[in-house]
Image (cartoon, rainbow, N blue to C red):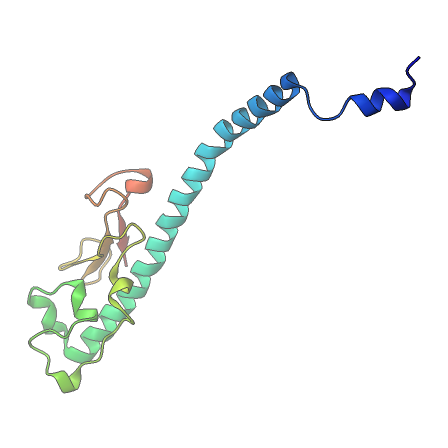
Length: 147
């Protein structure tokens, strides 16, 4: 006659049915959780874009204070924060950002500098067109415009 001790010795590990049930449960959980995590990533990128755009607004304002607001009349791009424009002598210029990557939004696209600005009372806008890189959109494709 088998004792409880002997029965436990013969039954070790999971049966195939138990393993399949665990895999199905994990699959259902992953299916429910994955879309939420993906949307959180998009939300965080959008928040980073807002923060970086606000920092670039400050840097453009410093550039304008150093080199004159009349420069906005000429067609300038966000690149003036890293590369010296032709109308500024080399002795008067130091980059306003650490590296060229500071001019990129979280999706790898370069921020835009729009003059005259469309938002608020400022003379210019800093714009990221979101994940799709095109004007307009919703969710992760929504534009970020600062100030």
